[in-house]
Length: 242
Length: 112
Image 1 (cartoon, each protein chain N blue to C red):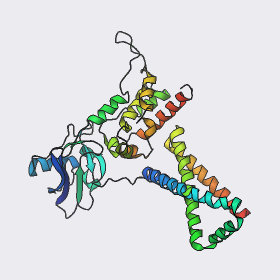
Image 2 (image 1 turned 135 degrees about the vertical axis):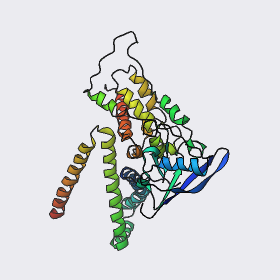
Image 3 (image 1 turned 60 degrees about the horizontal axis):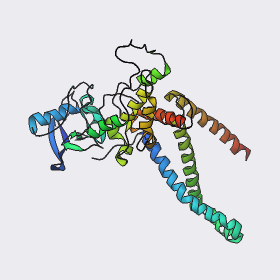
Image 4 (image 1 turned 30 degrees about the vertical axis):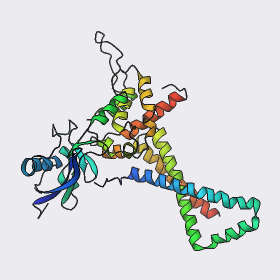
């Protein structure tokens, strides 16, 4: 950023106990800095009461996602230079989730839906039995592999306008998890998964806007996973076999 | 904070919705005018003279555009949701449809 030694950073403050308001800070600009670095600088040097969340700083834990200039992003892996609008950035808490305070969103609804989508393993064997081999080349294993790198950051949930308009909608991450388990050779209860995702707020609520796939920081494709669930539930409805 | 949405798939989504609303508003009027063909042919002919006006011609272009956008948007959605194809396969399929429409459309324009 030649000629600019400061960034203008607007941060959304407030939460249930205080009114929501934007607050602007001048933050020193460096050649290499992430949005999380900028938020940390504010908290450490300008206002220690700023609340935000992070843990690993290397894009693995999924805890630092925020809205940056209107787009949900993992802030620890988002370089300021890539998202600057003029010389400014605007940072807010993730959309579609309740705000705890400032930049920290309450992730409870996101994880509750993960459970509601039957996003848990249904074992085929007990721990006393031999481990069943998995064929990595199998088509369904490939489909499952496509979704396993999800870090639960809620960027897709926050990007989705269907979530914004329909509080019952399970959302892209939970549905992608259900699709992953549905394709897992070691999952024993695929009907339970299809039951969980075919009801009100399930995969058929998706309008295929594709914001989940467009903004997923790990370049996963929840849109296609949800389409897979739509096909699987429809096939089952018409009595077809997988 | 203003939410940024303008990626191609979202634009395709909103175009499909808006063209659908536009067609839904048009269709009742369309059927109402067509009903004159049964009840009052003279009134229908009088109404159809309107189609000579440049503004109406432009509006007709708009209607055909809405119909085309909605038709191909719907085909896109069906392919997206019902065909477990990879992205390159879908791109090739779309290119094949576009190419064949172009060739057959050119032939059609030559023929009439």
